[in-house]
Length: 137
Image (cartoon, rainbow, N blue to C red; front, top):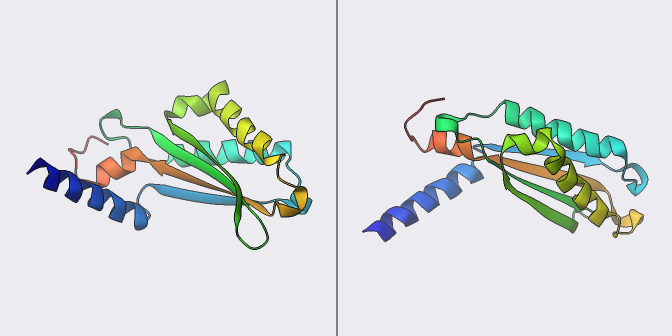
């Protein structure tokens, strides 16, 4: 019976994510394919802003963050998952280092193929809240 409950829970989480629950997205156009310090700062600011707006039932405050770069045709030319982290990572050097590592990987992509950077942040607290776990947020 547990397997049916796990499958139902997984399907419900997948449905909530498809509906956009807990999901924040952003994009940054790369003028001339240039990777700048402003891009790095913009990504950090977006992550912090997204985290500030999320729910934290029972202290569930972890987020999953992913970044990608697309070319003019919308094809992904570089991507990186920053993993599941706590907000404190983005108020110290750990988050900055992870974003810098993605931007370093992006340097390996020819400038002509770098059109825009897209980011996705998934709030696990928002998902927990919507799953009707006891609400403490």
